[in-house]
Image (cartoon, rainbow, N blue to C red; front, side, top):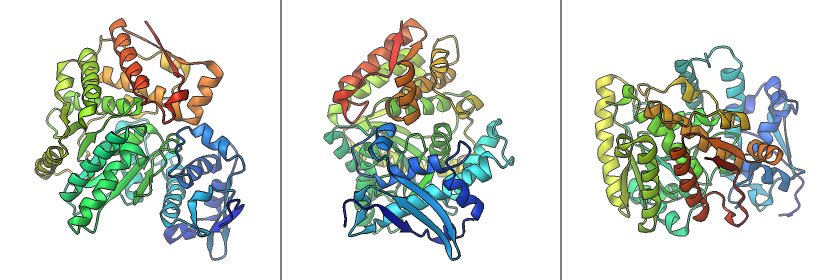
Length: 456
């Protein structure tokens, strides 16, 4: 095809063929109240799948002429895409998987805005109201499958990992796939792609024809973690907090591979839930795993958790090194315990309603300099509350590393200043420095400048 392709017109399929004129106008509206800016950001990320760029701002700057408009014609909807990335096409035709992801972007942006955020039907200042909203977004994306036994394994881990760690994540996915377990990840590259790639082979060997490769993301992170080509069920939640909650409501167990600040955010988020007294008797398997070369990494994670949250928190970290088969067996066995628990409690197999999540953990945290400086990073609080505050600190670092808004914030005002208990600050500084030295913060680690400053 012409490498300098200027315009492509595609027609969405299924229910997206009948978007209303108002919805099309919203998606093309470039004002502050419109959806075009979000659509452009998410669509460009989807079409840029496979690149090594993990900066939302740099991606937008690399394609200054990229534009997407939505129009309604007599027979349905048209997407007019100007100056798209050329690697999204084969012989002049857009790759089918990328089309599907693009349609998911349209679906979720419109639904979240009109039916969830602005409809007045959901109490988004109430804990149950937020969980209910997440349920509806997931149901609209057809992520919730009734009459299916628990088998969704969430895999967390970094997008900037070593080749050995990536290969291990593939092997782990293969072992999970051999046991007919489905995979859910943050949908990007690295440790999010590896388990899916391995599971494809495992499912294929078992002639398991209904393999699910679920990708869960949000607009702020999608440019850094563009949906990989294996994802066959994509859902975009409005913010990181709803994305994280969706993982633990939809998934039945979690395997964590090595990663950076984002992976630490996820671990702390889950610990803030598992350490809450109201969740003490709810089974939720968690395993941290990687190759032998990752031993020191996981020891540093365990050390940080021990020295900040205590031994009870460390006890929730089941670390299994270089034994992907053992991890898969434990996850498979745990599915039966979860099935029995859901059956006895009359909870749904496809959505974990019983987990208690505090409202403070559900409401969006805006990583401004003021909010980052005002985090309560002291030990004068229950461990689950401290875990939640620490999660926000790492969330801000992720924003400063890869999210367009966060990068702009750092460019304008300098690094975030993080302060708190001297012992906790020492632990954070040590852990983050190890991430930098191991090149886990960015894909292009040679140019990494910290977006944070630890105040002791």
